[in-house]
Image 1: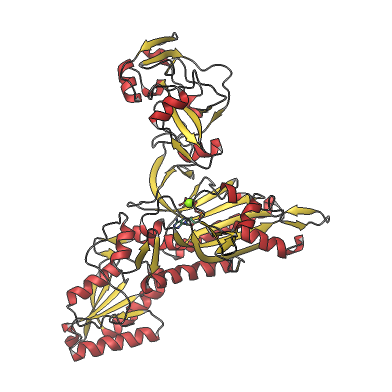
Image 2: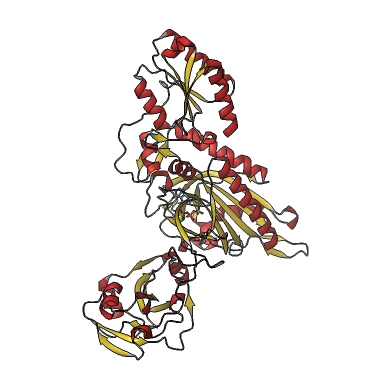
Length: 573
Ligand code: ATP
Ligand code: MG
């Protein structure tokens, strides 16, 4: 491909609405064009990368025995009503009506459709197991579409769905998929960490995420992991052992329950300072609205609430912290002095986090403005504790008790054991060996194809631009004749171009009548893995061979440069 013909426009400046490196670089290097918030056109360079990632996904999925199909993007409400998700899926599901006033939606995922397709097609245990997948566009009206392709509203996903007659067989396939995912990301040049995760709106009991860990990670995921054992989990699922399991206010002289004045102590810090206690001796209350109802969460003073865990514990679709006015109106407390005490539990849901178990002689609110109760203990009837706290770095690994570390990650893939979550309500059954109808036992497996492209950039870039891993580079080699008007330079550049193309290598020749500096800048910005520069030294028979990743530059004969390019491409794709 001639650079002069390539449908691309590189920009000098970064876009000003971009925070993430991958977003900035994808726009500046001409890979994507924004149509509207979270919706982009993939320009030819991006399309090539997406096709390469898709090809790798396809090859590995096929190798694992899965079969590709393609399902509708626009779907009728009926299938969603059958599974029960029409009512519970939040605003991410974009709903609309067709001309006959039928409720329709744009596919955010395809569990419903595939379950109905398989239910219509597979009747006997003899036709199971089955694993089918597609690579297709999804639409989710994300509340915070941002970071370019990392969290788009329209994006490309590979989604696979497997159907089984037993939990054991599902677990077998789950392992096959886990290995397939590791292979896929490795072939894309990405190392991934597999972490335990929350199942979210998709549901099911067991699920794992494939995370690309990066220094720049703008991914919204914190991953807690242990360096001494295999434990690693998304923060929405991570658990830990606290350094100080039991906290006792007696340490600070609070052994007897009494109300004390604590003026101007709205925050835990102010209160701890005023009473000269450690925050872990304070029983903190946090007020939330969940699905329009009030809730109070009790948690140890030095800990924070993990909102995904809380959402699960409340079985809620939406949660948000209470406004001050709501605290006054719904709870009757002054903000900063809330507690489970003196609350009508018929009207307000109260939850106790695991970290409150075993607290003794603590400090707690709920006894009026500018007052706290000290030396308090939980009533004996409080027995139900849930895990709704956010793990902190340095707390101990739940498996081997060594300190946990934290890092940021981008979730590129996700695997779930769904069980009968969809097949049961949708009445999707097969006939077993005894002639009985049984619901399919299902698994589902997603990969964010467009997100993977962005994650690769988050991982591989420098101040000059993108550094594509060879396997997913839009073109592998960029040939730059320094002066296209110089006959020898031009002729040699085209010879190299022809030869490499003949060898099946994807090559750009920068035939533009432009300064060499401009061509070099674009080459680095776009991120071609190899650059061959044909300049003045061609009079001595030499060209310059530059490897984008290492920055290494060597002078080689034309023949050697061609051979090295072939070798480098083969070696790392
Ligand atoms: P997230 O927690 O990031 O919203 P998810 O759990 O909703 O992801 P899944 O429903 O499991 O995601 O979708 C499978 C894969 O699709 C994810 O692992 C991710 O790589 C990708 N994906 C999900 N949402 C988006 C999005 N808004 N933009 C780009 N890729 C996405
Ligand atoms: Mg999501």
